[in-house]
Length: 201
Image (cartoon, rainbow, N blue to C red; front, side):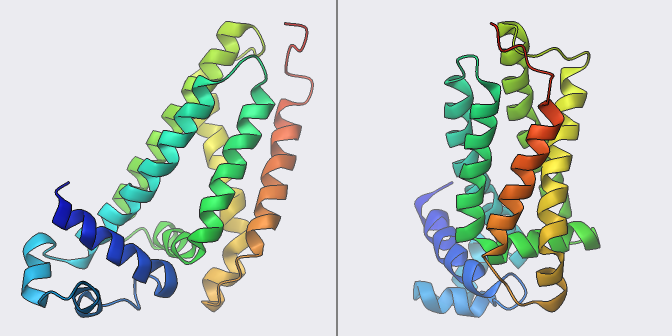
């Protein structure tokens, strides 16, 4: 991504994080950047293309930090999973309006839904890598690591959706819901891995 596109993505991210996808216009982003609307459309012919780059920017930042956590795995799977959940909770608080927008796109299955599927697959790949490390270490036993990683990611995302559904419907963001989401996710992790880890390794 060239420097001009990076500037546009950063400006759009600020707008989207505060007002959401639907309430932000391309003209407002152009004004923030002090460029013409025509110039903005030269780089991004439609808002969906810009939304996709913004989502990929956030996801890329999260993924890089998650990879570091996974690479630091030393035999304590729950520790790494909880650190990953804490990391995502930090981002969700900062970009809670975008979380609601993403959830709405999942529900509608329109707009940028395809890129959300791609981002989910990348999340699954990171968790797959972590589970593989845990299996190779001897801490965890799984018959199908890929399937387990996919199910785990779907459960975690599902809890995020369930806990924020009232905000999605009302359109009134309440970032304190993130704490509830995190508690639910960690409780689910404890339940999922209860009596399934070999802590003697």
